[in-house]
Image (cartoon, rainbow, N blue to C red; front, top):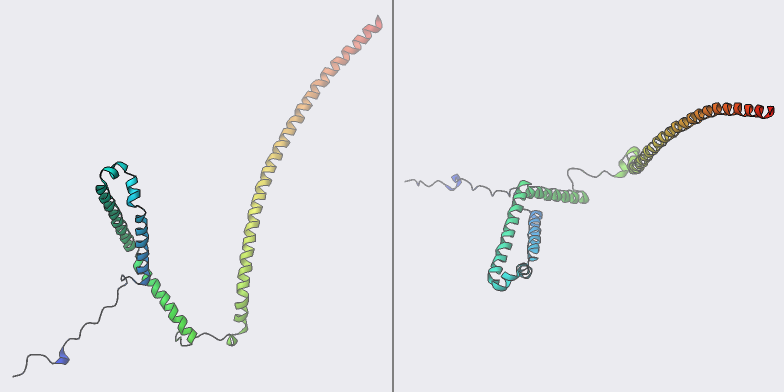
Length: 220
């Protein structure tokens, strides 16, 4: 009678082990979390029982045990709250995923650099400089100089434009002051002319009076 057990070749293969997901903390993510927890513990250590008791001198004297329990509960509550908020921010900002992606980029860059150095890079082989045409070589040497000079010229141009704008503003203020002075001088000249006209009329009257006085004196 044939056995009901299927042969070994018909058994379903075991599923392959799943690769780590993007949410599995990598080296940098773990280091970041460890650093935060160490900084948090160091901060909470500053709230020592002595300094905490100094804030409540009466309770520290009459009920030190209850005060120590309150200190322990408060620091533990602060630590739990800070860690919970930190986990929320880590999840909202996708910090672990982004740090893992950064770690992958750095690892890939290191591998590419190693392959390029050893001459086994299958993606892009370095081009020997002596095989390049003259124009790229000249541009490679001159472009950095041109960019530097262009940056300096742009900075000088911006400085000159700023100085010119300040000078234009100064000239505008001086022009306005000159116009005000001219108007004032015109008013003064007008006032002097009016005064001269009145003085001329008065002078003629005084001259007539003087002549009549002389005639009167001459007839005596």
